[in-house]
Image 1 (tube, rainbow, N blue to C red):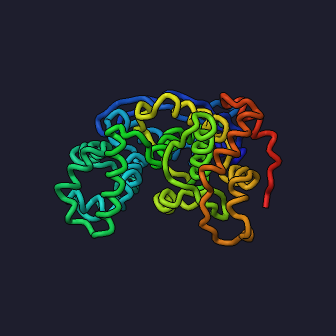
Image 2: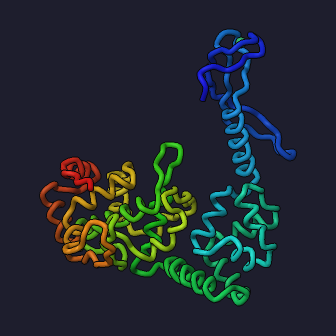
Image 3: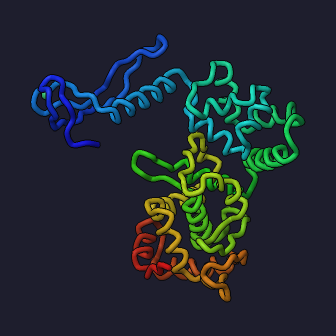
Length: 335
Ligand SMILES: [Zn+2]
């Protein structure tokens, strides 16, 4: 933002201060308050107009409007696509809506009341399963397969089966995203968090969280199915998951995940990548491969268990502080 702004009262460029204020506004007959950032001239104290601030205030007001009216936010709609691994057009088709309907919603247009209710229902996998069983045949074979696979995972998890799917653990981490404090998750970072969740579960509660194996890819350990699921985000952040129910996790699982999130969640993807490159399991699995070689070698659960169990003993790791001590001691190898 510029340092000076034109003040119409003083009729010249002036410095300004920004103040947060609770503003009351009315959109489509609904009156509500939201936190706006307002700029004032430092000399005459009159309000001055700054485009960036004004744009941001409008955005905040629109989000708040959606909140009070119970209208899904854009990222919550995105999340539905994400959760079921389907595209915008596929979702529209499944619901018998116009082909561009969902696309328009993702562009920011609020859904009608009826369509909003429908979308909210679909946040629950059991409702999606019902729609899928009724209308699934209208979809292409590929879309049908993808949706049916993710429903299998999600509905199975609702039945409280013994083992979590890796997708459930991924959703745990995505529920921790906090855009305001800068704690975000890209696909690369997600894979690293998944790797450390599994590693520390093997060391601390002495069993895996999920059955998927990690492969020793160039940029660190990767679960390939998750890679394909979130690939479209490339280096961008994956939207927050807002309907994750921690009750589906056992107490000991949640404890491990919390330790991992506290210790690793604050780092960015590249730093976490460097950490995995500095530890034995990934390095050993890539033995014989050059730095840039494509490699699908599995990092075995045994090698992970052995490595992190030893560290757990050495550092007496019981909580995220113990883990912080270890992480700070790692001699990070950048390549
Ligand atoms: Zn002024």
